[in-house]
Length: 380
Ligand SMILES: [Zn+2]
Image (cartoon, rainbow, N blue to C red; front, side, top):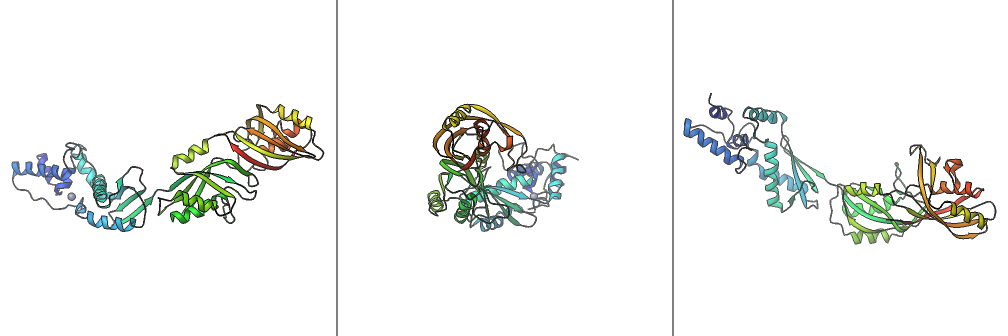
């Protein structure tokens, strides 16, 4: 049989016929291309009965208005600027369509692709929103059940925090009660964004009993399924900072998922202020020579006993940049330490029973205990 006659034997509509050759003449719509083919057929073979819609499309392109109403309805309460259309079609129909297209050299496009494109244009015209490959909201149209599903991109806000207290962790405990830096920031943002949940990603973390001072630590807070995205960052910041929680945030800006990895991989040197204590009066001479010995010294730290179970038990080499003595008073001394990212400072001082080598205690020749510790600057 002549292949043109064969083409019209499938009882496809004009549009679905035209789509079989979508890549042959891209200057035309699938419908226009189908019309040309029908005209050619008629010119050679006379009249042909072409259905208005067919078993592939089931007239779906005449129902864009219905899908628009459904999508607009579902999305009406959400704040967004960009969207992307996805769709689900009956897999049997997609397979059937592919079989026909294969017969003619696989030069077509699937109905799914045409629908996503055409509905996207239609949706944009009616809502004024922009199409994007990294959208605020992915609108999934299920054409089997005529339903709409929204996949909302999380909201990411970057900032830095300082912590002026020695009793809260950075993130929530798994069974979740009690304050954390994460909850003190996250609960406020949850209110502003009307999202479902929040997660704080820190550029490293300090211990519960360590204050984070100076220029603060970088973080990204992530909100799942935000209804509102255009948060007033100053209002959000003022509310967190005005709560009297001891957590202050600043440098806020809208961010994205990539920023999380960037801040997690950042390895900044840090400056600490520590107060040490000994059982007997501290010798200035011995402490000074101890501090001198650590200038640009690389130490070996086996994973501390207190964190084993959470981290792999291995030996890390870390460089201590300098140790300065700030003050000595009887059995106590205040020192400033600058070290490479990831150094365990408490263990640098107390030695962790020989797991950190050398330690200040081993150099000094007597046990030195950490009375208090604060991060005072992150060298970024
Ligand atoms: Zn059709």
